[in-house]
Figure 1 (cartoon, rainbow, N blue to C red):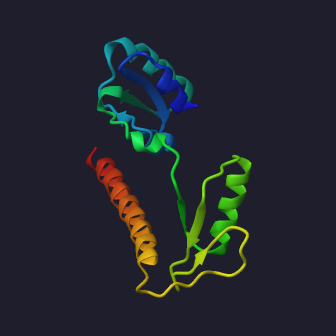
Figure 2 (cartoon, rainbow, N blue to C red; figure 1 turned 90 degrees about the horizontal axis):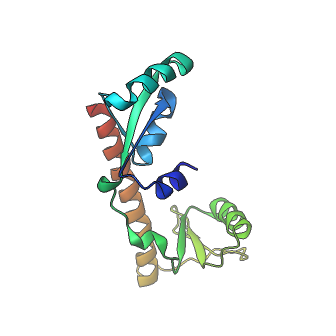
Length: 159
């Protein structure tokens, strides 16, 4: 709902207020916490404080957001990090959303590859180029997630 509102908004900046426990969620969406409320919003800020208690003023600046066009394209393959259980959950989601994208899961322990509707895992030799490519994709996803999380936490603690 919030993402759709941001897309539809014509202005470059969107100001709002959020409860303290939702702050991290809004930061993930690209909002930033602001220390000084603009004059135009001071009255509304005081009113919200009375009604809702401790709230945090936030702003979303469209000029600061860089859109990655690759996320708007349908992938050729989805690699799920995990084994049979994760593949089973992903299968349910793919079915609910009527997605017809090839997908598989890669379990870490023995590097087993699981495919939907196949009971047995595929075990490739450790030197196999296809397995190395899948491992690199998974490891890059881990690296990205870890660095993104560290970046979010460092922003959180700098304020």
